[in-house]
Amino acid sequence: MGLYKTEAVVLRARDLGEADRILTLYSREYGKLDAVAKGVKKMRSKMGGSAQPLTYSSFLLYRGCSLDTVTGCEPKEMFAGIRENLTSWAYGTYMMELLSCILPQRVAQESVFALLLTGLHLLASGPDPELSVRFWEVHLLRLLGYQPELEYCAACRQKIRTAELAFSARLGGIVCSHCAGLDPTAFRVKGGEIAIWRRLLQLDSRHLFRLKPNADTRQRLAGLLQYYLQYHLEKRLKSTDFIQHLRSFPSQGVHGSRCINHSFQRENN
Image (cartoon, rainbow, N blue to C red; front, side, top):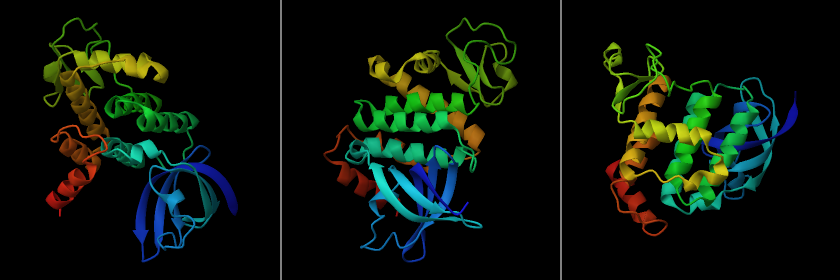
């Protein structure tokens, strides 16, 4: 193929030697791919800003035998609203890590790419970073073929009518009280988190922030999605630990984000 152009979101950047980085990109036309950005760490590099994670850029790449090479890139959108708020940045980092882990190499899915841009815009400009990411997560699972059963028991196929039930990642969705014993690892749910999950799937992104789940339902939905994703990924995402760490601090918005970040770094050094 030689040289080719594509627009992509930078999911990840890994150091390679003193001056280079390997970028993991997600593009509309080529899906997820890795490419070397040579000299990007140098002070005079023109690619620095365009090659950061959570950046939507236009890339010129050269197809190599094992890794492609970035020969040029220009930023299209930096999502400043994400970078200016630590909570939004933490959730954005989570989005990038999840995509890096869950997507196959070089499988283009235009709907997933469009959803990624929608999720980043919601995160950058919306008033509720957590709800923005929950919306993005449930739609990502649907598009990738991981949509669980949320209406009928995944084991016996009976309509769920009780509030107290369980969710089994192994069986593929909610299970009734009679079938919950089939999976000892099933996640206990109260019902409110399942109702919000269903509602998120129905909502248009323009009306997302009309939804006002309470704190308990938010926490339970976050735990449920983490359990479900961890089952399919077969590992825990590192970014979830930082998000959990942030929850232990009072809400501080943009102000105070530096001291929280420094505290997190000290505890993990």
